[in-house]
Every structure is written in C-alpha cells, then in structure tokens.
Image (cartoon, rainbow, N blue to C red; front, top):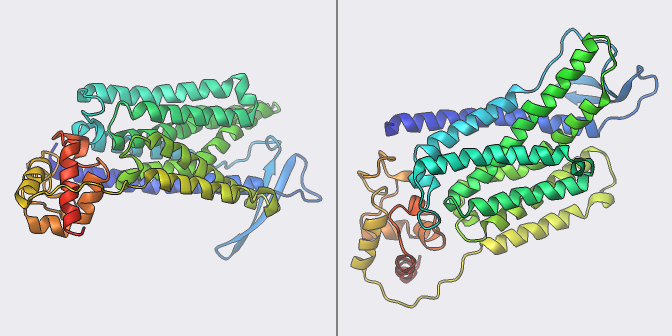
Length: 393
C-alpha cells in the first residue's frame, strides 16, 4: 500500500477510534456512577428501584431506574451500543493498518519468534477469539457466581495471555495485543451479552410478560467488568509510545500491575460515586500507589556499566546499518516516505542532537529498530550506549 494512503487511513481510523471510544467510555462511566448513586424516594412509582436528581448544562434532570423493567415498553427507548461496536471496529482496523500490513516491523521480532507475517496474523486473530471464548465460559461457569473469585480468575487469564504473547510477538506487538484482547472482551460483552439480554427483556414486555430479572443481572455483571477494565485498556492502547513498558522480559508483570492500578483507581471512583465513607475504601489509594511504584521499579533502566571506547566511525557504521533505513532524508524502508518524527541519524551531529532519544529507544530498551528487522545485537547496543555516554547524553 502507498505510504501516503496508509498514513491517512491510519490517521482517520485513529481519530474515529478516539471519538467513538470517548462516547463508549463516557456512557459506561456515566451509567455506573448513576447506578451507584441511586436513592430511594418516598412516593416513587411502583417498581422503581431508585432515583437521582442531576444538574448539568443549565438544566435539572430526574432519572429513575426500575428494579427489572417498567410495566409497559416506552414509546421511545434509547439504546447505547454503537459506541462499543464502532470502538472495536475502528480499533481492529488500526490493528490491520498498523500491525498486519507492517507485521515484520511492528508485530514480529525474530529474536523472540521468527515467523512469517500470515502466521503472526493468524495467531493474533486466534488469540482474540480464544480469549473471549475462555472468558465467557468462565463467566457462565459456577465461578461466575462468586464475584471475587471470578475477578481473580479473569485477572490470571489476562496476565497468562500477556506472558504467552511476549513469547510470540515483539514487545510492542505483545503489549498492544493484550489491550486488543481486553478491548475485544469488553466489546463482545456488549454485543453478545448485554444488548441481547436487554432485547429479551423488551420482547417479554411486548408479549405482556414480566421480564426475567436474571437477564438484567447478567448484563450488569458484564457491564461492571467493562467498567473496571477500562482504565487498564486505555493505557495499553497508548503503550506503543512508551517502550519502557514493553521492551524488557517482565512486560507481562507490567500488564498485571497496570490492571491492578487501573482497577483500584476505578474502585475509588466508584465507591465515591456510591457515596460511601472514604474510610471504608481508602485502602485502595495506598494500594494503587504501591502498585505504581512497583511498575516504575520494574521498568527502570539499568545503569550503564560499560567502559569500552567506541570511535565515531564505528558508531556511525552501527547506526547506518540499523537506523538509517528509516531515519534518513530518503528512507529505504517501504513503510516510511519520510523519517519518523522527522529524526535523521546520518551524521555524528544528528546522533548528538537526538542522543537521549536514541538511548531510550535502542539502548535502554530494544524498541528500535522496529521488530529488530536488522537483527541488532546486544553487543551493538552496548557500543552505541557507551558512545552516547561518552557524549554526555
């Protein structure tokens, strides 16, 4: 595909993904907060579980939630579903444009597993499908009736998937696939469980029957799962900008810590929205801080210990072999029409100018070269780091 066309397609999909994602996340957060903040009111109509008065945008709103469903189907019923569907669709489109069409650069790392692009793509799709099926089976099993145990098992499932993916894809590819897996679980929850169960309740209302409360309870369970997974998946989806998260052997542990941090922060917000005494749930704040400190510790770069001397000519040879295929005035890599981020490494002056970024991307991590297509060795990274250290960068 033409690089110019690919870049525009990537940008349009990314923009659309953000727009619909904001809509989905916004409604999810709003309805969980609404549900937690409901209050019993005297004189409320029969069947009303709780109500809430709200003020926003210069107006007052009075919202009611029925225990199961209203006695009759309203004439106008607003459904919240397309935000979730389009978020997944645009996200999968980005996965195709960014990772499938450039599999050797973004998805495959020969040092991890040297596989052909079609094989990598097949594993990617199979992972998303298998992840949802296993998650759904767990939720429908007896484990699904015990919320704490269910949360623990789903947590182990995601971390296990993360560990496995780090042995198949590049660090960047593995991390984005964990986010894609969680996002798929969330979107399919809406498509396969939440909306179908709501439709069953509507059908029962139309038939003049009392809706079965189990459908609402199952939908609520999946909705809460989505709510607690939102913050972790958001960070995973932007992880490609931060190689410190994935360019080391313990990226699966970082995933575990991100899930813990995001879940605890979401718990703090949810309990606040429910109006609970802060002393009851305040433990979540220091727990999240400890998990964050642990993540920072795990991702901290190791101090440079090499004392070798590297000449300018030698470091230029390393860079020209591994970097300038992309970072040049006229890139030779088929995926780039111009140097990424307009950074060129063709001279010693270029290296000195961008030395700090080079160290982060190619010495302190193995994020570059992309997919390690040029097979840059640990010895070469050490030499590059030693030269940069000698330049005071």
